[in-house]
Image (cartoon, rainbow, N blue to C red; front, side, top):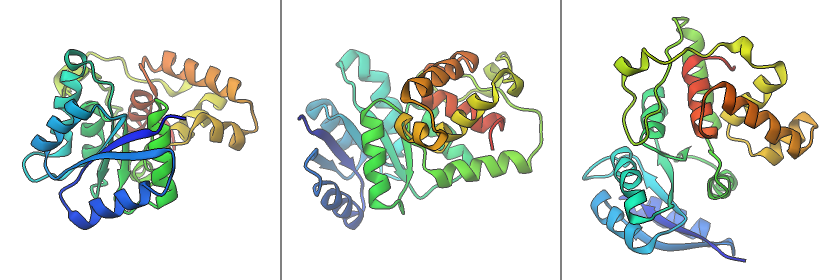
Length: 238
């Protein structure tokens, strides 16, 4: 079985060593490189081509969001398929949305439990988004506390969310999703995999995949990350 190859980009030595030590306890994970700033990290990612980059949002030379944007912008030219897992102390909605708009695949808090970090790594490796439940709850609470007109999002690849262009997007209509699709969407937002969603809702994985496909179509989203962010920003789940 091939290992999940990871590069850690984190400037705090104790945090980086702790994450590396924890990940290397698992036989299916290999930490192939470490960097302490964005410039060094980007060079390392292009050279080593890992499966996942675990990136701190608060790097000394530029933030992890900008690093993610640069990596994703050059991914096609460099033939890179590295997924980005943002690791941060920031738990505000703006940081989350900016990270995903830059192309981040998953988003975790630094105080995440080790088991959950492993789940995040594996979910991300399998091509799905993992959003820390704490972040999901905070964003949903903010949406509920600010009952303003839903603000549609423009998901233009490798760019920031642009409020002016977003005005041309069609707002999400909650009633277009069935009750079951809303349940599945809520669990997607909370970062659960298809297998866990199936267990929680007592349905088959195949049925979950069908619901996910319908959700993506109805939200005009390319993947689970876009669907989750649109749902959080519009406040249609919670």
